[in-house]
Length: 189
Image (cartoon, rainbow, N blue to C red):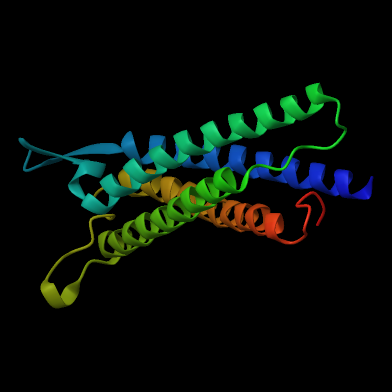
């Protein structure tokens, strides 16, 4: 009985983390993708700053969008597994097959690495946008495009939360996979 209660807590934690990851990743993608500011120079020349001006931000939007969609699908899988277990009358939640657990583990690991890579690239590009690179005579643009930089910063903050959630989901999927090898029956921890 204690094993079923602990397993239910693991499943609820997995669902909550996947929902959090989906929400934060979608928020990050939306904030960065809709970020734009136009500034007028010399009373006639207009320059519009968008996320497309920095390839690292484009990469972040794509990866966080994929992360949001994948996490939403995996959250639906978690709900389906819980509903199937409840309908089966077995009392406990069924453990996934090893093949499915390996697939989920591999995809979660790849997603966590991709989100962290995109986040690192976007953070580096943002530091250069904020401070500039004096050695190369690049000036910081955040003094000129303040609203653009603030919205990008909010998107990056959401992406950091999504990155933390992706790492936690990867840990949880590793736990779910390797506990299948822990006992001879595969049904207990």
